[in-house]
Amino acid sequence: MKLDKSKRTIIGMLCLYVAIGIVAVIIFANFGSKTSRNRKAVSYSFEDDGKAGATVNIANVNVIGDSGVQEEEVIEEPEEVIPEPTPEPVVEPEKVYYKFKVATNIHHLRVRQEPDMDGKILYYLEKGEEGYVLLTDGDWSLVTNGTIVGYSANEYLELTEITEADLPDYFPDEYK
Figure 1 (cartoon, rainbow, N blue to C red):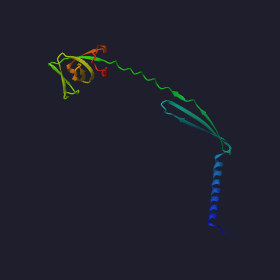
Figure 2: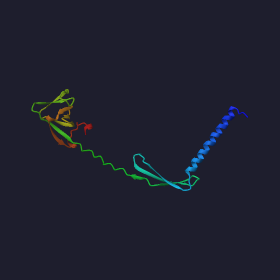
Figure 3: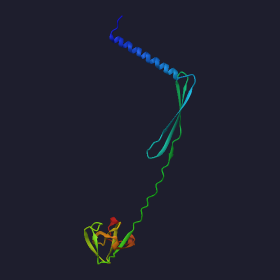
Figure 4: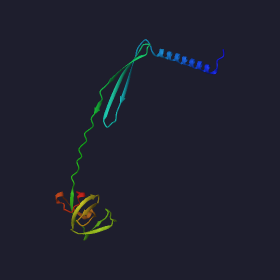
């Protein structure tokens, strides 16, 4: 009896499936035994959602006999949450205000557009003239006398610390 090509393909595939099944039974039979085996599986998980914490899962896996029945017991330990440290309160330093007096050895002090010796000269303050410091930055201060605002070198200013109550009405609010 001669079989056509499609029938031969079907029979070949059936033989292949039977062979795979036999191999699976042999492997499964060797896997299971009359004695039971205990295995422990431990898993750790750490989550980063802005909080520190840890979860530990411990599982006991018990493989029993030839049947290959598995029993799993999961013991979850409580999640340990480590509290975040309380941030220190931000204490802003108290604003310090200064009154200045021109203290040059010459008769006037140049007030400049930029805090630099090459900065454009905006105005001249006379020796002994007074005003207020808006901000200090290194060797230079932004000063005002009510008429102008510009930079002067600190080495030519005699500074006196004052309170906010001592500031004149013309002192700009953005520098308070």
